[in-house]
Image 1 (cartoon, helix red, strand yellow):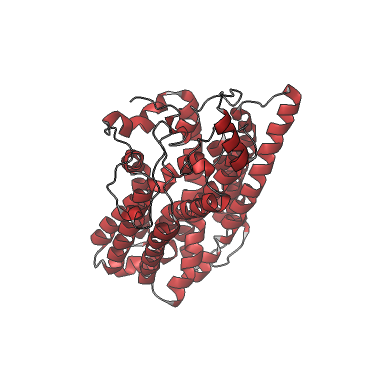
Image 2 (cartoon, rainbow, N blue to C red):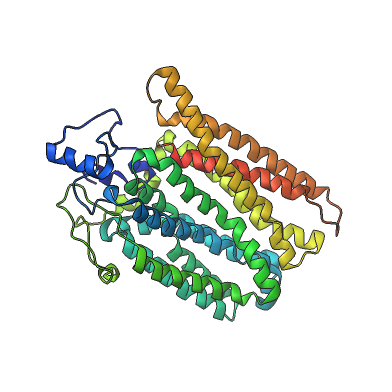
Length: 425
């Protein structure tokens, strides 16, 4: 596939890594210089914004941050929906004629779909823009959540869960690229941290909130609430969302009205979609610099987030006899660990980079941030050991907090690894 002038600078983390060197300062016209000084107060910017008001780099802060909030919340909903039924495994299983393990497959299936669905959405978002994808994603996900609420059988619910995951999946993969194409390099660390935090908060926050719903209402209301949230997202994108897909090699783009946002088939990029573009995220795995971080993150997220989140109901309900509300409260430790991990990862990462810059006399390469990831790996291992050993030694029907302490420690490390690998570009 032919590369554009800046590769739109920003389709995802891999594309972001191909941006021009920060030390290269392109020659600009006096008119361009004056525009940048008026808009940004400086010309030493990377990537260099154009003189187009529709360029996301030139948007006012409130507009950028509004889009970031919509995107980050949308990304959280990808894992939030998968984990939403966790506190309801027991009553849901009884209603559908299966056990807790069978009910857990309704979560596992969504996780699998979330893994490959972005391969489909990524090229579509490049051709038609991000905004149409967000609208289709939220609307269709809401419809299939209604389908889950009305499903009479296990098989019907499984099908609806898979389609709901397929449609809600785009922001978990495209989201980081949208951050890159919206914010200048000096802003991306903090903004990417917001996106990664909400992605990681999805698995523990869903069972925490829906434990109360299951206990005081009915498990079916989990799906009704999810559908309502999806439809609110749909409306929020129409009212507040803006298109971040911007072709820098083209002429300045015309503005969109609120109603033009729902014109889903207005093509932005005329280039045809190729099969190689669809499988590109898989093909680049042949590079060790991509493969090793990917495997590392997959293992950390899989064990420290997914495994613990799914294991808690299967282990804690029979061991401690907890009801859905009590079960959901156990996820507070993971939420706290994740938030502390994010608050630690950003400042520590910046400190490491600044100290190295003072020593070298220039900015070190981005991969120097990887040193901080070792702290994340170590705390994940420690947390998993504490969780497993203390759960194994727990006295039946006598709940104790020590396994959850281990889960919180693992969540702390998981968030550090997530933030470091997502911002190391």
